[in-house]
Structures are given as C-alpha cells and as structure tokens.
Length: 265
Ligand SMILES: [Cu+2]
Image 1 (cartoon, rainbow, N blue to C red):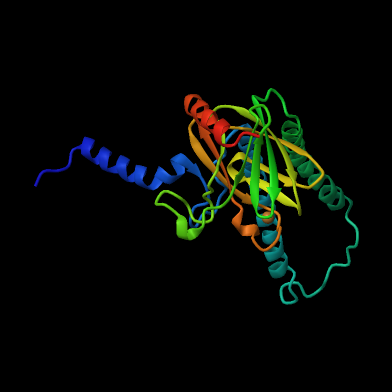
Image 2 (cartoon, rainbow, N blue to C red):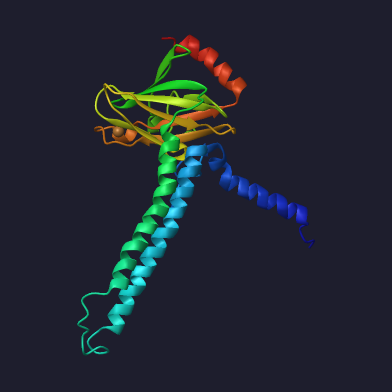
C-alpha cells in the first residue's frame, strides 16, 4: 500500500471543503444549526459585525463577573459561615465605583454604536437607485433610472428546481451589479412590511405613504443574498422572501437589456 502524497491529501481536503462551503460561497443564507451571524457582506455589515463582536465580549464579561459575585456572596455570607450580619448601610468607595464603572462601559459602547448609526444614516456616492415596495405578500422592485419594474414572488415548494431553496427562492430576483453601492427607497402598498437581508445588514420598514431610505454595499464577488420580510404582515408573511443577486457588470448589462423588454414601466 502506498501512502497518499501530500498533494492528493490536499486535493481531497480542498474538494471536501469545497463541498461543504459551496452553498455559502455563492449564497448568503441561513445554515442548519447556525449560531452566529451570517458572514458580513459590505461595509455596513462589517461594521455591524465588529460592533456585535465587541458587545459580545463586554456582555459576557459582565455576566461572568455578576455570576461570580453572586456565587461568592452565597457562599461567603450564608448564615453558617457568617452568623453575625454586617450593619453597613453606606460605602462611598463602592457607590462611586458602581456608578462610574457602568458609565464608562456605556461610553465605550456608545462611541462605536453612534459611529455606525451615523455611517449607515448617510447615503453617499451611490451608483444606482432601486425602489422596493412591500405588498401582501410579495416584493416589487422598480429601477427608476432604467424604467423597469417587476414583482418578486416566492417559488412554491412543489415547483422548486434542484438549485432553488425552499422558502427563500423567488421567481424574479433583485439583480444588482457586483461591487456597486445602491440606494434603496423602501415603501409599502398595504400593511407594514420590513425589507431584511441579514448578510447585507439592511433591515428597513416598508410603510405605505412613506419612503424609507437605506443603502447597501454589494461586494465584488457574484453572489446571492437571501432575506425575508421581517414584520408580521398577515397570513403569508413567511412566504415573501428576498433575493438580492449580484452579477458581474457584463452579466448585469445582459440582464438589464432583457429586463427592459420584459418589465418596461
Ligand atoms: Cu411580512
């Protein structure tokens, strides 16, 4: 028996890794048993993820500290080991500490938090505009500069093809050029909906008679970003998913040419 060469082991590992990663390479969507957030796509999502990671460290440290204090107090000051209770009612040092330390922690949280809020509040240097309208129970995408508009319905489970995803795939996806920055004008036609694509870190209410602005940075690689309506909007709320598909510029141009035939306003 010959031992497998380093090269062939590499190929086996690489192809296995490819097998497991294939879905996540081309798509950002929820995975079975997922615990963490979806991989961040675009500058807003990256900043949101790093704030989330910072908060996770802080809240974990606080929780562990409080738990340790509780355990210590339960053991040290129980009746058996501390028969004569202390009569202390004030301690200036401790009171200053438990006021100042939480204030400092809140300041540490507030600075990156406000920075992120202001960052995503300002829509700057966008390449194109897409108007998103929530309906019971589908989305409509309008590209005002291209004079096209189309509805996007979920594919029924019975009609799914092999490469489509149950409850997430749609008939007409929101197609965008990879590597672009897009301004979203989000509105509604009936009840409230919410346009939510976790990997792109966009979650904005869709409300009739009101236009909410948001923006997304679409990364360079061609990929599909899956999302769902995130505001209970009636009996089919769970069946109005969102697919934002980033295509290379030439494929986007080809799609746009055919869309102008099919979806002209
Ligand atoms: Cu909904």
